[in-house]
Length: 425
Image 1 (cartoon, rainbow, N blue to C red):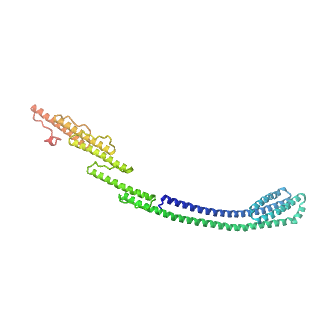
Image 2 (cartoon, one colour; image 1 turned 90 degrees about the horizontal axis):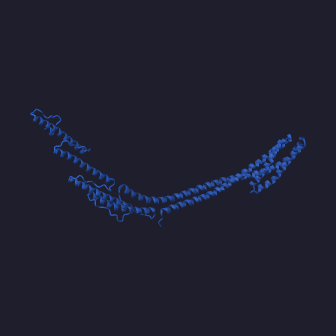
Protein backbone atom coordinates (compact mmCIF):
# COMPACT_ATOMS: atom_id res chain seq x y z
CA UNK A 1 0.00 0.00 0.00
CA UNK A 2 1.33 3.43 -0.97
CA UNK A 3 1.45 5.84 1.97
CA UNK A 4 1.50 9.58 1.36
CA UNK A 5 3.92 11.90 3.12
CA UNK A 6 1.01 13.50 4.95
CA UNK A 7 0.02 10.11 6.40
CA UNK A 8 3.62 9.32 7.34
CA UNK A 9 4.04 12.62 9.13
CA UNK A 10 0.61 12.32 10.75
CA UNK A 11 1.45 8.84 12.06
CA UNK A 12 4.79 10.09 13.43
CA UNK A 13 3.08 13.06 15.08
CA UNK A 14 0.39 10.78 16.55
CA UNK A 15 3.03 8.46 18.00
CA UNK A 16 4.77 11.46 19.52
CA UNK A 17 1.51 12.57 21.13
CA UNK A 18 0.79 9.07 22.49
CA UNK A 19 4.29 8.69 23.94
CA UNK A 20 4.13 12.17 25.43
CA UNK A 21 0.75 11.35 26.97
CA UNK A 22 2.12 8.08 28.46
CA UNK A 23 5.12 9.89 29.92
CA UNK A 24 2.80 12.61 31.22
CA UNK A 25 0.41 10.15 32.92
CA UNK A 26 3.23 8.25 34.60
CA UNK A 27 4.92 11.50 35.63
CA UNK A 28 1.60 12.78 36.99
CA UNK A 29 1.09 9.66 39.10
CA UNK A 30 4.64 9.78 40.44
CA UNK A 31 4.39 13.47 41.23
CA UNK A 32 1.05 12.96 42.99
CA UNK A 33 2.62 10.23 45.08
CA UNK A 34 5.55 12.51 45.88
CA UNK A 35 3.20 15.35 46.79
CA UNK A 36 1.19 13.04 49.10
CA UNK A 37 4.35 11.90 50.92
CA UNK A 38 5.57 15.48 51.14
CA UNK A 39 2.23 16.52 52.64
CA UNK A 40 2.62 13.80 55.28
CA UNK A 41 6.12 15.05 56.09
CA UNK A 42 4.81 18.58 56.41
CA UNK A 43 1.98 17.29 58.61
CA UNK A 44 4.40 15.60 61.03
CA UNK A 45 6.53 18.76 61.16
CA UNK A 46 3.42 20.81 61.88
CA UNK A 47 2.36 18.47 64.71
CA UNK A 48 5.82 18.67 66.29
CA UNK A 49 5.83 22.46 66.05
CA UNK A 50 2.40 22.69 67.68
CA UNK A 51 3.39 20.29 70.47
CA UNK A 52 6.40 22.48 71.15
CA UNK A 53 4.08 25.50 71.17
CA UNK A 54 1.85 23.79 73.79
CA UNK A 55 4.88 23.22 76.01
CA UNK A 56 5.87 26.86 75.60
CA UNK A 57 2.30 27.96 76.46
CA UNK A 58 2.44 25.98 79.75
CA UNK A 59 5.71 27.65 80.62
CA UNK A 60 4.12 31.06 79.95
CA UNK A 61 1.13 30.13 82.16
CA UNK A 62 3.43 29.09 85.02
CA UNK A 63 5.45 32.29 84.58
CA UNK A 64 2.27 34.38 84.85
CA UNK A 65 1.18 32.40 87.93
CA UNK A 66 4.49 32.95 89.73
CA UNK A 67 4.58 36.66 88.88
CA UNK A 68 1.05 37.20 90.23
CA UNK A 69 1.66 35.11 93.39
CA UNK A 70 4.78 37.15 94.19
CA UNK A 71 3.47 40.62 93.30
CA UNK A 72 -0.31 40.23 93.35
CA UNK A 73 -0.43 42.49 90.31
CA UNK A 74 -2.96 41.60 87.61
CA UNK A 75 -0.64 42.54 84.75
CA UNK A 76 1.43 39.43 85.46
CA UNK A 77 -1.58 37.27 84.55
CA UNK A 78 -1.48 38.29 80.90
CA UNK A 79 0.83 35.37 79.88
CA UNK A 80 -1.47 32.98 81.79
CA UNK A 81 -4.67 34.24 80.15
CA UNK A 82 -3.08 34.14 76.68
CA UNK A 83 -1.61 30.65 77.24
CA UNK A 84 -5.00 29.10 78.05
CA UNK A 85 -6.49 30.27 74.71
CA UNK A 86 -3.41 29.22 72.76
CA UNK A 87 -3.34 25.73 74.27
CA UNK A 88 -7.02 25.13 73.46
CA UNK A 89 -6.51 26.19 69.80
CA UNK A 90 -3.32 24.12 69.46
CA UNK A 91 -4.97 20.99 70.88
CA UNK A 92 -7.82 21.32 68.33
CA UNK A 93 -5.30 21.63 65.47
CA UNK A 94 -3.19 18.68 66.66
CA UNK A 95 -6.34 16.56 66.92
CA UNK A 96 -7.21 17.43 63.29
CA UNK A 97 -3.72 16.68 62.02
CA UNK A 98 -3.51 13.29 63.75
CA UNK A 99 -7.12 12.20 63.21
CA UNK A 100 -5.99 9.39 60.85
CA UNK A 101 -3.79 7.81 63.56
CA UNK A 102 -5.88 6.05 66.31
CA UNK A 103 -2.93 5.84 68.72
CA UNK A 104 -2.31 9.56 68.50
CA UNK A 105 -6.02 10.28 68.89
CA UNK A 106 -6.06 8.14 72.07
CA UNK A 107 -3.10 10.09 73.50
CA UNK A 108 -4.79 13.42 72.78
CA UNK A 109 -7.94 12.24 74.55
CA UNK A 110 -5.77 11.39 77.57
CA UNK A 111 -4.00 14.74 77.31
CA UNK A 112 -7.08 16.98 77.32
CA UNK A 113 -8.30 16.24 80.92
CA UNK A 114 -4.72 16.52 82.20
CA UNK A 115 -4.45 19.98 80.61
CA UNK A 116 -7.78 20.95 82.17
CA UNK A 117 -6.59 19.76 85.58
CA UNK A 118 -3.29 21.60 85.25
CA UNK A 119 -4.97 24.89 84.36
CA UNK A 120 -7.55 24.34 87.12
CA UNK A 121 -4.70 23.98 89.65
CA UNK A 122 -3.02 27.15 88.37
CA UNK A 123 -6.34 29.00 88.46
CA UNK A 124 -6.98 27.81 92.05
CA UNK A 125 -3.59 29.10 93.16
CA UNK A 126 -4.25 32.47 91.53
CA UNK A 127 -7.68 32.80 93.17
CA UNK A 128 -6.23 31.83 96.57
CA UNK A 129 -3.53 34.52 96.19
CA UNK A 130 -6.22 37.11 95.62
CA UNK A 131 -7.71 36.28 99.07
CA UNK A 132 -4.66 35.21 101.12
CA UNK A 133 -1.14 36.29 101.90
CA UNK A 134 1.92 35.21 99.96
CA UNK A 135 3.10 32.88 102.77
CA UNK A 136 -0.19 30.94 102.75
CA UNK A 137 -0.07 30.44 99.01
CA UNK A 138 3.63 29.58 99.14
CA UNK A 139 2.89 26.66 101.43
CA UNK A 140 0.47 25.23 98.87
CA UNK A 141 2.93 25.77 96.02
CA UNK A 142 5.69 24.03 97.96
CA UNK A 143 3.53 20.91 98.22
CA UNK A 144 4.29 20.51 94.50
CA UNK A 145 0.79 19.16 93.84
CA UNK A 146 0.68 20.60 90.30
CA UNK A 147 4.02 19.04 89.35
CA UNK A 148 2.58 15.53 89.24
CA UNK A 149 -0.09 16.61 86.73
CA UNK A 150 2.53 18.46 84.70
CA UNK A 151 4.73 15.38 84.58
CA UNK A 152 1.82 13.33 83.20
CA UNK A 153 1.21 16.04 80.62
CA UNK A 154 4.89 16.02 79.64
CA UNK A 155 4.83 12.22 79.39
CA UNK A 156 1.84 12.17 77.03
CA UNK A 157 3.32 15.05 75.01
CA UNK A 158 6.58 13.09 74.76
CA UNK A 159 4.70 10.07 73.43
CA UNK A 160 2.92 12.23 70.87
CA UNK A 161 6.19 13.84 69.79
CA UNK A 162 8.12 10.57 69.60
CA UNK A 163 5.43 8.99 67.44
CA UNK A 164 5.54 11.96 65.07
CA UNK A 165 9.35 11.85 64.96
CA UNK A 166 9.20 8.17 64.01
CA UNK A 167 6.56 8.91 61.36
CA UNK A 168 8.61 11.85 60.11
CA UNK A 169 11.67 9.63 59.60
CA UNK A 170 9.58 7.04 57.75
CA UNK A 171 7.89 9.65 55.62
CA UNK A 172 11.20 11.38 54.86
CA UNK A 173 12.63 8.12 53.53
CA UNK A 174 9.44 7.51 51.55
CA UNK A 175 9.65 11.04 50.13
CA UNK A 176 13.21 10.50 48.92
CA UNK A 177 12.34 7.12 47.45
CA UNK A 178 9.27 8.57 45.72
CA UNK A 179 11.28 11.48 44.30
CA UNK A 180 14.03 9.16 43.05
CA UNK A 181 11.45 6.83 41.52
CA UNK A 182 9.63 9.71 39.83
CA UNK A 183 12.85 11.10 38.36
CA UNK A 184 14.01 7.67 37.19
CA UNK A 185 10.68 6.84 35.57
CA UNK A 186 10.36 10.21 33.85
CA UNK A 187 13.96 10.16 32.58
CA UNK A 188 13.74 6.54 31.41
CA UNK A 189 10.44 7.02 29.61
CA UNK A 190 11.60 10.30 28.09
CA UNK A 191 14.79 8.67 26.78
CA UNK A 192 12.86 5.71 25.36
CA UNK A 193 10.29 7.98 23.74
CA UNK A 194 13.00 10.21 22.28
CA UNK A 195 14.92 7.20 20.95
CA UNK A 196 11.79 5.71 19.39
CA UNK A 197 10.75 8.99 17.80
CA UNK A 198 14.31 9.55 16.55
CA UNK A 199 14.34 6.16 14.81
CA UNK A 200 10.89 6.66 13.29
CA UNK A 201 11.72 10.23 12.28
CA UNK A 202 14.99 9.12 10.71
CA UNK A 203 13.24 6.47 8.64
CA UNK A 204 10.59 8.92 7.44
CA UNK A 205 13.11 11.67 6.70
CA UNK A 206 15.42 9.28 4.87
CA UNK A 207 12.59 8.00 2.70
CA UNK A 208 11.62 11.57 1.83
CA UNK A 209 15.18 12.88 1.38
CA UNK A 210 16.14 10.02 -0.96
CA UNK A 211 13.31 10.91 -3.31
CA UNK A 212 13.96 14.64 -2.98
CA UNK A 213 17.65 14.09 -3.77
CA UNK A 214 16.74 12.47 -7.10
CA UNK A 215 14.36 15.31 -7.91
CA UNK A 216 16.96 17.91 -6.89
CA UNK A 217 19.70 16.36 -9.04
CA UNK A 218 17.42 16.30 -12.06
CA UNK A 219 16.48 19.96 -11.55
CA UNK A 220 20.14 20.90 -11.06
CA UNK A 221 20.99 19.27 -14.39
CA UNK A 222 18.41 21.52 -16.06
CA UNK A 223 19.48 24.72 -14.30
CA UNK A 224 23.26 24.22 -14.40
CA UNK A 225 23.81 22.28 -17.63
CA UNK A 226 20.61 22.96 -19.55
CA UNK A 227 20.18 19.20 -19.80
CA UNK A 228 16.54 18.36 -20.56
CA UNK A 229 17.21 14.68 -21.17
CA UNK A 230 17.11 13.49 -17.55
CA UNK A 231 13.99 11.73 -16.34
CA UNK A 232 13.30 10.74 -12.72
CA UNK A 233 12.63 7.11 -11.81
CA UNK A 234 9.45 7.02 -9.70
CA UNK A 235 9.55 4.66 -6.68
CA UNK A 236 6.50 5.74 -4.69
CA UNK A 237 3.01 7.09 -5.07
CA UNK A 238 3.30 9.79 -2.39
CA UNK A 239 3.48 13.53 -3.01
CA UNK A 240 7.15 13.37 -4.03
CA UNK A 241 6.36 10.56 -6.48
CA UNK A 242 3.58 12.69 -7.91
CA UNK A 243 5.94 15.67 -8.06
CA UNK A 244 8.50 13.53 -9.89
CA UNK A 245 5.88 12.43 -12.38
CA UNK A 246 4.82 16.05 -12.94
CA UNK A 247 8.50 16.98 -13.38
CA UNK A 248 8.93 14.32 -16.07
CA UNK A 249 5.88 15.68 -17.89
CA UNK A 250 7.26 19.23 -17.57
CA UNK A 251 10.61 18.18 -19.02
CA UNK A 252 8.88 16.47 -21.94
CA UNK A 253 6.85 19.61 -22.64
CA UNK A 254 10.00 21.74 -22.37
CA UNK A 255 11.83 19.47 -24.80
CA UNK A 256 9.02 19.79 -27.33
CA UNK A 257 8.62 23.54 -27.10
CA UNK A 258 12.38 24.20 -27.04
CA UNK A 259 12.65 22.12 -30.21
CA UNK A 260 10.00 24.30 -31.84
CA UNK A 261 11.71 27.43 -30.53
CA UNK A 262 14.98 26.29 -32.03
CA UNK A 263 13.37 25.76 -35.45
CA UNK A 264 11.76 29.22 -35.43
CA UNK A 265 14.99 30.97 -34.34
CA UNK A 266 17.09 29.02 -36.84
CA UNK A 267 14.71 30.04 -39.62
CA UNK A 268 14.94 33.70 -38.50
CA UNK A 269 18.74 33.49 -38.62
CA UNK A 270 18.40 32.45 -42.27
CA UNK A 271 16.12 35.39 -43.00
CA UNK A 272 12.86 33.46 -42.84
CA UNK A 273 10.48 35.27 -40.48
CA UNK A 274 7.37 33.40 -41.54
CA UNK A 275 7.79 30.47 -39.17
CA UNK A 276 5.74 30.22 -35.94
CA UNK A 277 4.95 27.74 -33.16
CA UNK A 278 1.81 25.64 -33.40
CA UNK A 279 -0.37 26.52 -30.37
CA UNK A 280 -2.50 23.35 -30.56
CA UNK A 281 -2.36 21.37 -27.31
CA UNK A 282 -0.44 24.03 -25.43
CA UNK A 283 -1.95 25.50 -22.26
CA UNK A 284 -0.97 27.83 -19.44
CA UNK A 285 2.65 28.93 -19.34
CA UNK A 286 3.64 27.07 -22.51
CA UNK A 287 0.72 28.59 -24.42
CA UNK A 288 1.68 32.08 -23.22
CA UNK A 289 5.34 31.47 -24.04
CA UNK A 290 4.58 30.23 -27.54
CA UNK A 291 2.11 33.07 -28.12
CA UNK A 292 4.72 35.57 -26.99
CA UNK A 293 7.34 34.20 -29.41
CA UNK A 294 4.83 34.14 -32.28
CA UNK A 295 3.88 37.75 -31.57
CA UNK A 296 7.54 38.72 -31.40
CA UNK A 297 8.28 37.03 -34.71
CA UNK A 298 5.23 38.72 -36.25
CA UNK A 299 6.36 42.15 -35.09
CA UNK A 300 9.93 41.40 -36.17
CA UNK A 301 8.69 40.33 -39.59
CA UNK A 302 6.69 43.57 -39.91
CA UNK A 303 9.61 45.75 -38.85
CA UNK A 304 12.01 43.94 -41.19
CA UNK A 305 9.50 44.45 -43.99
CA UNK A 306 9.31 48.16 -43.15
CA UNK A 307 13.11 48.40 -43.06
CA UNK A 308 13.29 46.64 -46.41
CA UNK A 309 10.85 49.20 -47.83
CA UNK A 310 12.98 52.07 -46.53
CA UNK A 311 16.13 50.55 -48.01
CA UNK A 312 14.51 50.04 -51.44
CA UNK A 313 13.19 53.60 -51.41
CA UNK A 314 16.63 54.88 -50.39
CA UNK A 315 18.22 52.96 -53.26
CA UNK A 316 15.87 54.87 -55.59
CA UNK A 317 16.80 58.16 -53.93
CA UNK A 318 13.47 58.45 -52.17
CA UNK A 319 13.97 59.39 -48.54
CA UNK A 320 10.42 60.52 -47.93
CA UNK A 321 9.24 57.12 -46.80
CA UNK A 322 8.50 56.60 -43.04
CA UNK A 323 7.74 53.50 -40.93
CA UNK A 324 4.23 53.51 -39.46
CA UNK A 325 4.73 53.42 -35.64
CA UNK A 326 1.08 52.80 -34.78
CA UNK A 327 0.72 49.58 -32.75
CA UNK A 328 4.43 49.34 -32.05
CA UNK A 329 5.80 49.26 -28.48
CA UNK A 330 9.09 48.93 -26.65
CA UNK A 331 12.11 47.96 -28.73
CA UNK A 332 10.25 47.89 -32.03
CA UNK A 333 8.83 51.38 -31.39
CA UNK A 334 12.29 52.76 -30.54
CA UNK A 335 13.82 51.06 -33.58
CA UNK A 336 11.12 52.44 -35.92
CA UNK A 337 11.41 55.95 -34.48
CA UNK A 338 15.20 55.81 -34.83
CA UNK A 339 15.00 54.74 -38.50
CA UNK A 340 12.37 57.40 -39.25
CA UNK A 341 14.64 60.04 -37.73
CA UNK A 342 17.61 58.74 -39.73
CA UNK A 343 15.66 58.90 -42.99
CA UNK A 344 14.28 62.36 -42.15
CA UNK A 345 17.76 63.68 -41.31
CA UNK A 346 19.22 62.18 -44.48
CA UNK A 347 16.45 63.68 -46.61
CA UNK A 348 16.78 67.12 -44.98
CA UNK A 349 20.58 67.15 -45.38
CA UNK A 350 20.46 66.10 -49.01
CA UNK A 351 17.74 68.65 -49.74
CA UNK A 352 19.85 71.45 -48.19
CA UNK A 353 22.93 70.39 -50.21
CA UNK A 354 20.83 70.11 -53.39
CA UNK A 355 19.41 73.60 -52.78
CA UNK A 356 22.89 75.13 -52.33
CA UNK A 357 24.32 73.34 -55.41
CA UNK A 358 21.30 74.38 -57.48
CA UNK A 359 21.84 77.99 -56.42
CA UNK A 360 25.54 77.79 -57.34
CA UNK A 361 24.66 76.38 -60.76
CA UNK A 362 22.40 79.42 -61.25
CA UNK A 363 25.19 81.79 -60.22
CA UNK A 364 23.69 82.46 -56.76
CA UNK A 365 26.48 82.33 -54.18
CA UNK A 366 24.41 83.76 -51.35
CA UNK A 367 22.76 80.51 -50.35
CA UNK A 368 23.93 78.51 -47.26
CA UNK A 369 22.77 75.70 -44.98
CA UNK A 370 21.37 77.00 -41.69
CA UNK A 371 19.77 73.88 -40.14
CA UNK A 372 21.49 72.08 -37.21
CA UNK A 373 23.02 68.70 -37.96
CA UNK A 374 25.27 66.23 -36.18
CA UNK A 375 28.07 63.95 -37.34
CA UNK A 376 28.67 63.57 -41.07
CA UNK A 377 25.75 65.89 -41.89
CA UNK A 378 27.34 68.61 -39.76
CA UNK A 379 30.59 68.16 -41.73
CA UNK A 380 28.69 68.35 -45.04
CA UNK A 381 26.98 71.54 -43.84
CA UNK A 382 30.30 73.18 -42.85
CA UNK A 383 32.09 72.11 -46.06
CA UNK A 384 29.24 73.34 -48.29
CA UNK A 385 29.02 76.70 -46.53
CA UNK A 386 32.84 77.13 -46.64
CA UNK A 387 32.91 76.28 -50.34
CA UNK A 388 30.20 78.82 -51.11
CA UNK A 389 31.97 81.52 -49.09
CA UNK A 390 35.33 80.89 -50.82
CA UNK A 391 33.73 80.80 -54.25
CA UNK A 392 31.95 84.07 -53.46
CA UNK A 393 35.22 85.66 -52.31
CA UNK A 394 37.14 84.53 -55.43
CA UNK A 395 34.35 85.64 -57.73
CA UNK A 396 34.34 89.07 -56.01
CA UNK A 397 38.13 89.39 -56.63
CA UNK A 398 37.76 88.25 -60.25
CA UNK A 399 35.02 90.82 -60.68
CA UNK A 400 37.37 93.51 -59.33
CA UNK A 401 40.12 92.50 -61.85
CA UNK A 402 37.65 92.59 -64.70
CA UNK A 403 36.43 96.03 -63.64
CA UNK A 404 40.02 97.38 -63.43
CA UNK A 405 40.88 95.88 -66.85
CA UNK A 406 37.86 97.59 -68.35
CA UNK A 407 39.39 100.87 -67.11
CA UNK A 408 42.74 100.01 -68.71
CA UNK A 409 44.41 99.04 -65.44
CA UNK A 410 46.05 95.62 -65.71
CA UNK A 411 48.32 95.99 -62.70
CA UNK A 412 45.85 94.56 -60.10
CA UNK A 413 46.30 90.95 -58.89
CA UNK A 414 44.35 88.48 -56.79
CA UNK A 415 45.65 88.04 -53.22
CA UNK A 416 46.74 84.39 -52.88
CA UNK A 417 46.97 84.49 -49.11
CA UNK A 418 44.89 81.70 -47.52
CA UNK A 419 44.00 80.13 -50.88
CA UNK A 420 44.73 76.46 -51.59
CA UNK A 421 43.93 73.80 -54.14
CA UNK A 422 41.53 74.77 -56.93
CA UNK A 423 41.12 78.33 -55.67
CA UNK A 424 44.91 78.83 -55.48
CA UNK A 425 45.49 77.46 -59.00
